[in-house]
Image 1 (cartoon, helix red, strand yellow):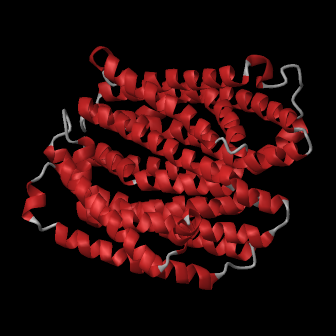
Image 2 (tube, rainbow, N blue to C red):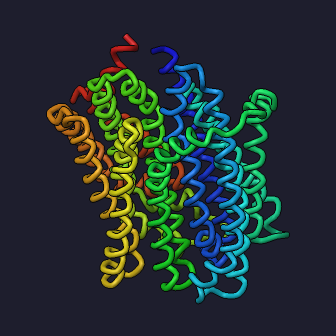
Image 3 (cartoon, one colour):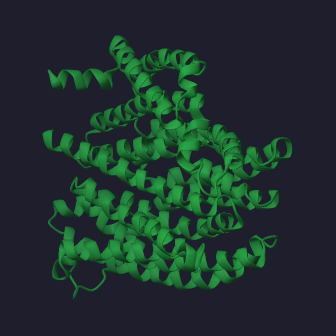
Length: 500
């Protein structure tokens, strides 16, 4: 338990660092390029290869962890690792080549209203991201090994390296290469991340080099992995659809949507990824040991811990969204006008952050049960719903409707997944979930009241935006801590008992 607690703290710290570095990357891009055609083109071009990258990066880990743990119990972990690494590299290499060629055709066809310079940048970005994919899959397999061994922080660190190289490339080469420097940094960072793993394991221990690929074992693994990977791709596919719609609204709109989505998704990336990553090996082991009650309890605690962290964060964001956007982006080429447009869009994304964070926990349940094909069906349905809602909402609201569509789809997607998982495990303990959710909502009410009154205090409004937001967060955090203790929220009470 102490080792798990220490690993959890390390994961949270490293995840915060990863998300902080990702935010710096977006901040650097905003500073040098604002909401220009360069950012529009970059975001539009990387979205399709990034869907394949997430397919491999996150999907691979979600499928590989329970598979690796099962083979490790039979002392065949290294053999299984070798089979998956070799086959994954071959598959990713083929996709890299085909995707790079396809970029010369699909991007100009999808964004024919873009300028010649924007199309050239988009093609280059697509090619560089697809070339990176050849190593992304291999990186993901080894990061799955780290997670299975509860070495979460090293897994996150190897992902952070990619982001840091993207930042450095943009800063050092933007004056020479312009927007071309961003994708180049990602490509170099992917190579660096792989080399770190080579050094860590040492080449001779990286895999069983002479072992031939066991096709039957690989086919069995990919039957489980493909539905998981496709489910992970759903979010990126929906973003691709949104960007395709956004391209018709003129220059800057894709940038507004992307900046807003990335910023608002920070709580999901920090809390969602952390909680889901921590519970995954636990519930996977519960399934391998056929302990259904422990599996069910793990999912329920994951949901309630997620709500405990997420709800007060969203409350603060509702009242201080403009301040958050200003702190994150408003400098250099990103002006006050861009801040207002991005803030406007950000509010409509809040629902997607809330529901997709819960879905991240529920999804781990399906992956542990090795029934990813079930959640994949819900994911494919969400794509259809997203297209329908995009057409409806943009007709009445303009491009803001694209963000609202994402939130509405997230609600339906999560609701469907929750019902499906409940049926698989003979229902949750609904009384427990309702009780804990009620406590968390009640504890969040004082936070909302405090935010409401702080918003109109002249002294606070006269302070620098960073200082003002820092004071607000501290005040909100202290109020929430006291109210959770009064409401006896389980997560907080467990921490108090352990300290005692």
